[in-house]
Length: 186
Image (cartoon, rainbow, N blue to C red; front, side, top):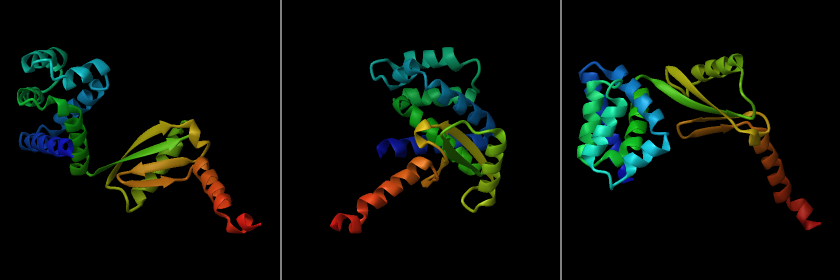
């Protein structure tokens, strides 16, 4: 809970600074790149390590990101590291992305299917989502392939989940047979 609060506050500060300096899209690009970089286990462990000193982490950040990131992003990383908040960096980046999407009216939707979707199917899903009242003005679709679904799809956005997979429907049928009181009494 504390992590979420800290991450939200730092992300909000960076977002406000981006709006103030008219660098919001540049900061978003940097945060997207940083989010991808933090998927590297070595960098993730470096960020989370309490043993490595702040000046060493700042030097590493400068080496890795100094040439491609904006000065505001580098200053932000420097401040976070000097205040020993770098362990929350993955959460801060995630909170920033969420707040940026909310500010830009973008809904992120995760679509899981048993097999990869065609571009035509993705466009139909996107159009249907845009026409619904559940999404914002723009929709960003993240696709996942999960063979355990057998068929159909699962759509997740925010705290909503729509499960139209065959695996879920089979589970419902199984549950109906398990809960059938008529058969139990025989």
